Each structure stands twice: as C-alpha cells, then as structure tokens.
Amino acid sequence: MSTITQPRRTPAGGSATVNGAKLFNRLCAVCLTLFALIWFVPFAWAIITSLRQDGSITQAPMSPFAGGWSLHAYSFAWHNYPIGYWYLNSLVIAALAVVFTVAFCSMAGFALAFLRFPGRNVVIALVTAGLMLPTEALVLPQFIEYRSLHLLGTYWALVLPSVAAPVSVFIFQAFFKGIPTPLIEAARIDGASWWRVYWTVCMPICRPAVSTVSILTFISSWNAFLWPLLVLNQTKSQTIPVGLSSLVSNTNIQYAEVMASSVLGFLPLIAVFLVFQRRIVQGVATTGIK
Image (tube, rainbow, N blue to C red):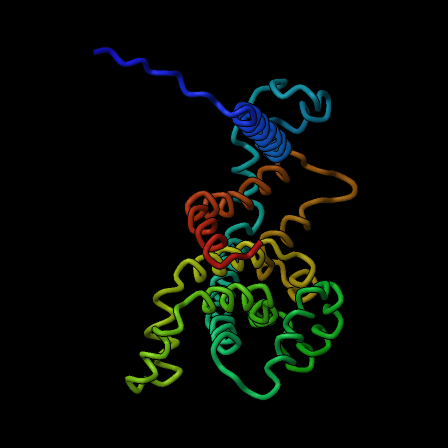
C-alpha cells in the first residue's frame, strides 16, 4: 500500500524573512569591509612610506614604488632617537597602570555590587559623573595637585590618574552583579569575611572582566598624549606618543623616519590586540557593557 507524501508548504512570510536576513548579513559585511579599509589604508600607507627614501617621497608622494624600498629609515630611527627608552617608559607606565587599576577598581566594583553602606548612592552618582566628565577638564587641577606633591616628571604622575577609571569600576560592578547571590551567602555563612569573599570567590570567577580592564587600560595608557606631554620634561623619560611628536619639525620633516618611528610605536598595540581580542569580546559580552 503506497502512501502519498505531500510537500511541505513554506509560510508566505518565511521566504521574506530569509531574504531579509541574507540582505542584512550582506549589508553588515559591506559595512565591516568599508570600516576595515578605512583603518587598513592609512596603516598600509604608513608602512610603505617608512620603506621609501625621503627624496622619492617628496618628488612622487603618490607613487608607492618610486625610488625602491629599504629598511634604512628603521635603522636610522632606532639608532638616532631614544626609541628604546620610550618603549621602556611606556611599558612600565602601562604595566603599573594595569596593576593598580585592576586592584582598586575591582574593589570599588565589589563594594558597589555587594556592600550596603551610607552614601552608596552618592558614590554611584559620582562615578557616573566621572563618565561624563572630559579628561581635558581635569588637566589643570591635576597638574596643580601633582606639582604640590612633587610628582611631576615621575612615573606616578602618569599612573595614579589612570587608576580612577569609572569605566573599569562599572565593568567590575556589572560582572560582580552577575555572580549568583547564593554563592556569596554560602561563603558568608561559612564564616568568610568580605575580603575573603572578594579574593577567593569573586576574583577567580571574574577573569574575563580582569582581562578586559587590563587590555583597555594598557591601550589607553600607551596612547595617552596630552597628560604625559605636560608632566614629562626630559627626552629619555618621555613615552612613545610624546617622543614621536618631537620628531616632527616645522622646517625639515623626514617623512620616512617619522613613519618608521610611528610604525615601531603602534606595533606593540596591534600585537596586544591580536593576541587578546577574544578575551576583550568575552569580557564585554559577559559584563554586558554596550
């Protein structure tokens, strides 16, 4: 006995939904490609310019293959400018900023997430106000403050302002709020203090938040320009962005050397981002920061 199988009917709106999803995916791919080109073209142009000769750049700036390519600009920049000191200064400052920011902002986020104390809403309002306050507005009062503390020209003048990061506090607070309350209550019932709950229960869980804050703090500290320009006055104590700005002269600009120094300056950031980009995405997705 044979049975007749009738073909399934596709809902009228099903094909339209599928076509709309495909169109949206293609639109997202086109936008992503355009943004990638906007970022990649200046990056590639800087590398090509750093490999050319200054004479060929002046004569034919739009011809990337004119005059040939060489690594002379990189050798000249490394041996004639204190790039090694700039690298070391930026690395030490960024590393210290990461350590202190993670330590203090995680404790602040833990307190705002779990503790109930007088003035808690006021503290949250102040942290929120810190998100809306531009960094440039704090330059003058910070300069007066650190001058009175005799910290100008030291690493601490660059590390301490980055510790008070409202964004990092909110990242930790959002992650701590996602920890199940029964887990915290069980630790408290077992006699654990708040410090032990923070150190042995919460911090091992919030590794994605720690990674996100660490990477964002490292990048922002490495790229800082205005505050290090005002605080650091010696050439060898400068950071990478400040040191690169001193290479540009109003009378004679060595394009190849400047581009080579710039490439050497942003290569560590690209390496850090490529290595830890999954942790950034994981941390942002876990904490719910938009």
